[in-house]
Structures are given as C-alpha cells and as structure tokens.
Length: 290
Image 1 (cartoon, rainbow, N blue to C red):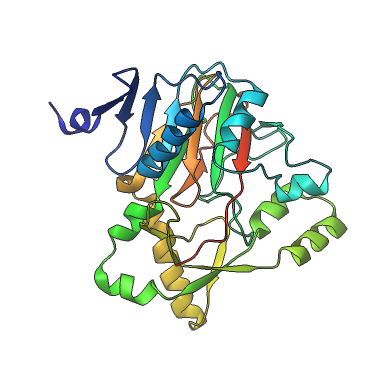
Image 2: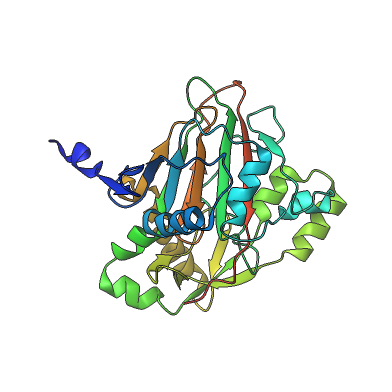
C-alpha cells in the first residue's frame, strides 16, 4: 500500500451505513451514506457537526440537493447570513442565489486564499457550497488548514505571534465587485477594518488555528511596518504549502461543507470561458477568540 492510499482510511458509523474516507493527511474527508436531500434529523446534524470539526472540510458527491435542502444543511451549523455586498443590494439572509463564476460572469474568476468574511466582527462559522454547472476541465477549489499551518510553525514563531492581532478589510473584494464610486466609498467606510487574533482557538475542537489570509488580512498591529509586513507575508505563505491542502474537482451535485474557523480556500482560475455555477449558503458564527 503506498503512502497516498494509506491515508484514505475509512471509518464506519451506524453499523456500516455511513463511510467517511479521509482524503489528505491534515484535512478533508469524503462522506458516503448520508442523504443530504432528506430531512435532517438531530442525530444526522450531530454527526455532521462532529465530522466537520474533526476533518475541517467534508465532500459529498451526487447529492441531488436543491436550494431549500442546502439551506437546511447550513442551519445545522447556525442561522443564515447574507453577503455584506449582496445585502446592500436587497438580498436577505434566507435568500439562496447562484454564483456564475468566470471571466465574463457575475462573480469571481478565481480567488486569493481567504476565509469567508473575516473582515466582519463575526465571520461566518461554516460555508456550504454546491456545484450546479461544472467545467469539464479546471475550476477546482482548494482548502488549506490553519490548524496544520499553525502546528507546523517553529516554537519561536508561535511564541512571537500567539499574542498578536491583525486588521482585516474587504478592500480587494470591494474593488472587484462594486463599480459605483459612491457605493464603493460608503462600503469601505462601513467596513474599515476589524481586528482578530493572529492565532485563535477553535470554538469546538479547542485546537489552535493560524488566522490570517491573503484576501482580507492587511496588517499586524503593534509592529513596525517593515517587520510586520515581512512576518505577515511569511504567515500567509504557509497556506500555499501543499502539506496543508486538499483539492476538489467539482461535478454537478457535489456539496462541500467547510469549517470557516479552521480553513481557508482558493478558487482556481484555469477554466477559460467555460460555464461554472455554484450555490453558497453560510452559517453565522461568534467572534473568533484566542
């Protein structure tokens, strides 16, 4: 058995009806035997939460899930939240809308590494993403674990960053998605920077998580500018290391659920003009803490 095969170990639940297959060493599991299109019982909800806190990202294939059923999955982890830009355009928290992603579409074509909405005081706790239309080639999503990124740091770096905070802003996202200058200025004034610890404690697993990202983390607090920039760049680059990553090839009907406290993700811009449609719902969370 080679090393990669050895990682794909299976756990069984409920007399073998549910199979959980680890995908990579540090995060990710593919789950078989849970019907996400069926009404979610409390026992199923408890199992989903337990699996997510353990594996950080869960993948489900050929789910047959629709918008209403996907919203129900999100509510397993918390109440729904509307995107901060979409909300300004009248979208409500309970609305479920498709994202047509691509170079000529209404959303991103690829993304930097980011955890969802860390520019909010209370970023989303969990994100649920479903593929409706997938390109034949490309358009994958990658996730990277802040847990393993932190655990792999040297002790002197851990000691240096454990008490630091960082400022998160949505500037890069806003410049891409808001074209009206007055609207842009108002949005950036409203979301002008929130501080989160550089290292947080996961609210359910209790594990330490490196909590900075390329998309929204802009500066470290209390350090000289040059020193802070060098350290922040080093910490962000941890998430580009393959040892911390898992990658998903989308197919229609695939659902990914991820722990937005433990991981960040990146959309890959390699599918040209092919159509790609995803639907996302998110669950609210509390403010991250040390």
